[in-house]
Length: 175
Image 1 (cartoon, rainbow, N blue to C red):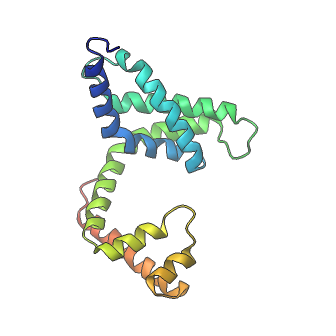
Image 2: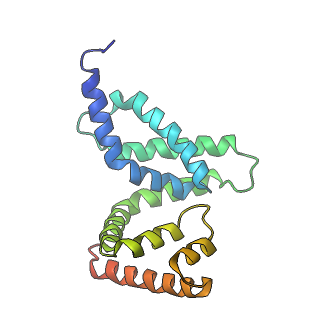
């Protein structure tokens, strides 16, 4: 059964969430020790955002609101993992969360610049570069796929990083 206006709410939520999901995920990722933990927290964040979306005032800042929800989800996750030595103290999480929220506009500009610079690479270079950073893929495998020795691949990777950094700096618009 469709509740009148429900599809409008769903559409608005999905537009906002998909527009900001990468930033929210990056925010969470900076506050928890692993990608797996970030995925777990993001599931909780998405559920809470959806369940409380009607409480966000019309025209409200979805990303800031989502960062607040994410911060509390991380703190809750931290409490659940309290005995784990890899978990940060609440005050450290609070500080990181606040600093991350302040840095987000600059970080977003950097992500856009990186995407622009990556798009300038040819498909083969971009594919090898992305594969080198893929979780669980040994660098030896990527080196072999590139036709280079491991040492040669690391040199190539260093040159690519340097080239991307120079590209990003040329396009810099952040402080």
